[in-house]
Length: 385
Image: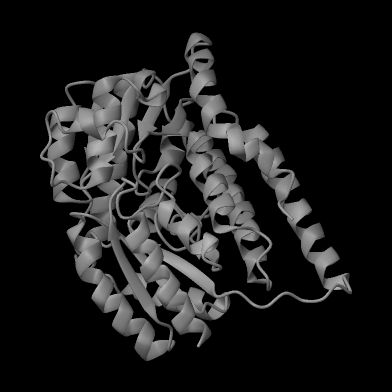
């Protein structure tokens, strides 16, 4: 049974794409961001609204390819196409953009995009072995603070920043509580519904409204689990429990997850940036807030970091915690870091968990759906023996 509370999240992004205009007309500043590495607490501490930016649809790629090479990652082409064509209202109404140096394609794309809006590009250290990594991150966050204050004309106070950090920590706890309910068998939430909640969180414009609906969803899912455990109805055959990892899978390009669930698999959760990667760690509320933000964000286990042992450890731990039967690693075409790292992850999970991994390299189009379906069917059959 699908939770009724999901009706809010089904329409949240579409509704807020219209309502963002009202935010601007009311006089509030808006700052857009693309990546989980963006310290959005700092944005909200200025009084501005942080919003995610459109990047996961096929339609604007043609606009992106008017400038960008065709053999580039679809996420980058979609991001630029949305911005250049004016089809993303969140970008259109943004007063500034927070970007980051996660991959070469994004860095060069941002050189073109910065002509459209005021932008700061955070310098993300690409090695986890840098001795002064935390110091570098702290300096970048302070640089972002100066940029926001100068661009928006609004000051960041320590009290505002601490309060915002506490608010976001609470939100992360609530989201992880919802995800943790999928430890039950069968999982009470589909992977696509979890995606709508977690991806939609970046596009909210009323944090209290989002919190109210999130808590209502958690309560309803708990009731579903409790009623199911008390039911005397015949148990259904167990479906393979799948963890999704790899390149970000956002609303609009969830085709692989849909194929998995249509084929009889349960997508239990995503480890990816569009999943729990940004929610598993909290910001230390007792430390200096700028250093605390640096410590939290520098440990996000993205494949742009080398080496990246924490992704292996996190995924392995999730496989144990959520009783995962198989991992599907979604790699966007031309995403070289995730493509290469897939082999490392596959071998790590084989050695430490005995869990098989299926890598699927794809783009945003529907042209490879049948091929993916065949591979997913075979993978699920192998898991079930």
